[in-house]
Amino acid sequence: MRKKLTPAKACTYVVLTFWALTTLYPFVWVILNSFREKGMIRKDSFSIPLPGSGFTMDNYAKAMDRFDFGNAYFNSLVVSISVTVVVVILAGLAAYGLVRYRFKLRGLCYSLIMAGMMFPVFSTIIPVFRMEAAWGIASSSNRWLSLLAVILPQIAGNLCFAIIVLMGFIESVPIELEESAYVDGCNVFQVYFHIIMPAAKSSFATVAIFSFLWSYNDLFTQNFFLRFPQEKTITLLLNEISSQAGVDYGLMAASVVLIVIPVLVVYVMLQKHIIKGLTAGAIKG
Amino acid sequence: MSSSSTLYKRKGLLVVFLIPAFLFLILYLYYPFLQNIINSFSHITGLGTPAQGLNDPWWANYAELFRDPNLRTALGNTVILTICTVVFQVGVALILALLVDSIRVGAQVFRTLYFFPIVISATALGLMFNLIFLFNGGMFNQLLMNLGLISQNVDWKDLDHFLPTMLTPVMWQYVGFYFVILVTGLNNIPQDLYEAVAMDGCVGLNKVRYVTLPLLRNVLCTCLVLAITGALKVFDLPWVMFGPGMPQNQGWLTGTYMYHQTFNRGNVDYGSTIAMLIVVLGVVLSNVANRVFRSRNDI
Image 1 (cartoon, rainbow over the protein chains, first blue to last red):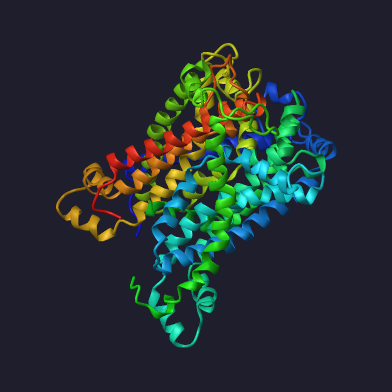
Image 2 (cartoon, chains in turn red, brown; image 1 turned 45 degrees about the vertical axis):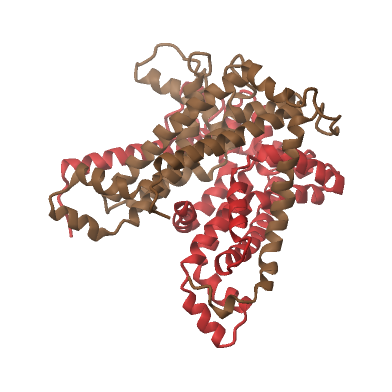
């Protein structure tokens, strides 16, 4: 069914395209300028740098040379993947228990989880730091312990959101399915792994993606626990570059691109889930 | 759902489901938060040092909240930010969501693009906006210069311009977030409802006003609560772009000021007090928003 392009429709597309440009163009601009020769950014940052007229890979070479991106990617991945795996497992179990069982403290548990979403991370981080320092995890010179010191509070920080989203989805799984499986001899755990998890697959994907992104992008917690060079994660590295690069804007642009690329790849691959899943929990309010 | 299901009768198993998650929450959220309340009444001089007893008087930090001119600035800016967030972020997101909902071709592309800024770290965005708002040769100045709108570079971070420079990126980043929530809400409105009212001659803006918006009310309310609590916590983008309180102590937000007091000045107890203020404001404001906007018969 093809409709004629009415003026109203045309206006709609103009407005939508305008906003799309504001979300996309800044990145395009940064990418273009990351390939521009030194000093050219301030004169003319809008043209496309071509070989022979301002194109260069120097900014990337310099960024790779001066900063240890490989190590930072590795630390970031260790932290974010651990956080993601633990959050998905724990939040899935908790959400399942809260949705399907009726018990006395259920209302309280739910309120506690909602309240947990309210606490700003800066109100909890100092006591957490002291607690972990007393356990010997935080501010030790051991790289793995320091990474663990970041992973644990990040898990807690993502759990509430994850539980809320998963509850919304698990509620919508028809319970008859579970009951007939039970009649066939499945126990509760088999029901969870063979029926609930496959049925709520896309919501598990969503929770995983968001836990990963938030953990990867979080500056505050990482800045707090990781102090030694070998522990630096990618956001910390970027923070360091911004203070060291001074007026070397090409270097800055190249670093931004290097940090954004992995996220961009993940996003493009999984964006279907991101858009679909995030909202179910929020809508329930 | 029937609770009569025999499958879920054995409540002992709940322990396995709930204990691990709640253990984390208690250790890493609730206990630290209680500790934070105690800290706000205590006298603490540094990050690593234990409390040296209660303050004298014990509410000294809370009295300081009313005297501190920087906190007043921070609250003022945060109020402006919250209002702008509600009006522009949710407003723009609503308009975009309604428009995207009305088209077929390209809707998916727009969704993907609009959500894009949220997946990027605020640190990277902060650096990017620093390049864009650069005084000498930034993208914005070059653009305006090329268009002939300005003849001299403008310092977007000076006293006259800093507020829009600080608020715009924050708002721009999260429009996509509310957009997605609203689009999903729109998708949940049954299509035959629109067809029914169209028969009664209700189309275009009337349709939006009398059908869409009332049905979207609870979703909008959720956005409002998220926008308010989000605005109170904003930290990384302004921090990367402006640092502590620039320019001239006028650029504070509650989030950045709390961080500064705690970590740069070692005023841990006062920082905890500001954190309490943030939480209390968040709870009160979101309750007010819920009272005023959420319809009673739903959920």
